[in-house]
Length: 545
Image 1 (cartoon, rainbow, N blue to C red):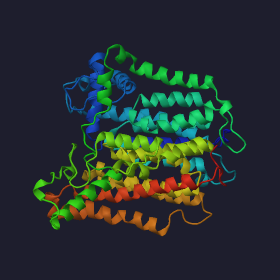
Image 2: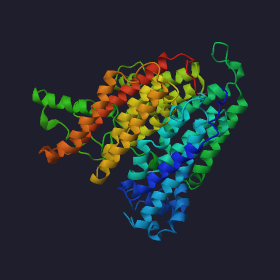
Image 3: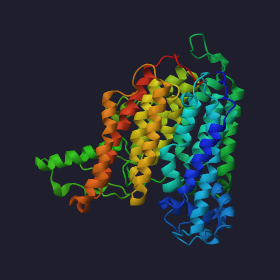
Image 4: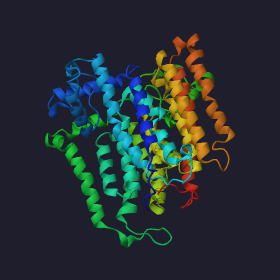
């Protein structure tokens, strides 16, 4: 494919948006922060104070180092700046240390690291084809910039809750941009680096692997778009392999030399945390859990089950732990892993529980589609989003924050296609609302409501303007569902705390939020898959090259 026309020469609006959101982030410095704040403070301390050989063994804090080595080195680098703010934060036994200087440093480190994200967004905008003469508010590059830089989820997860997702998503988006610009070696290198910064991105690795093999290692296609086998380039495959292996060698090499690879891997892939997080992510397992609960209640009511023989309802206790389902088969880590991986690679003929979810996930056609009819950057992006969303739907101990891995890349498709814009609105509004329980303090309530309304209104208005021809982006049923989030918020936030059930069933509002949002996320996933299976190789409005 050919690189699209760059953005207009007057880019002052981009810098204004970047500075504006940076100023907003600075205003949030003293806001509530979660235990993730202590997680990263502890990692600063242990990488600064201990030799490399002890990094993945240190267990003074319960928040042990469980990110790949490159992120550990990132923390190590930050720690050498942190010592100028407050050296006490770098003392390992100083658990839950949060002096004003420590808070200031860690907040600023996230804000400054977002420079990578800003640059990546700018590069992604260069991959959009602009229509001349359009007003600024109608330009895809402007809309995309706001959807990414001012993304509600990133703002509350990184700059209130506390994490470094902006920096990581910057690496991902820059990798995507490089592939859109036919700079595939750079794109592969950046994604390899990303995998060694945070291993959750392994879920989208199949999209990268198939796309690079099909569209880069095979240099030509037949006239009908099918693969020309004789065009395979061994040289390109070897170079790609060398880039990936070299990156992993640099990252894991020291720990392999120390004989610590098994220990590192045991930290990266723990399976003792239970199927669901304390707050259920809005995925298929939330619906599975509530179905199991409903069946158990009905079974006891109609005397089909003995209440004394049922497992305790620990899954509704709001704790991070393993639990057994009461009626439906309990799901193991291996089941979710096999379900996610095999649903990407192959369809199973068996009619057991795993196959049901494999059929539902429908990831295999995504990879088949990108192999059989790649459809350039759009096809790669769509496959990437489906892999991300599929892993969110079926993964083990999925955090609600993981939905961002699907929302941000989908933003690029949303400014390119009417159908994708509608799917984006459904997924982003539902998923962003599902993040509300992360901020449970009273003082953050107006902040999260205001920021979400601001982002949602802009998303609806801008995408409606961009695709003004062709009718509404959402049908009446979808609008009704999204409006249902309003009474749900009123009940969970204002009504339920006043009832007598608050003390007896404190987890109920979280469960209602998770289950309601799971319906919307599942619907968006199905719509996205239908669009994949029904779209033609070319579309009328192609802005992305």
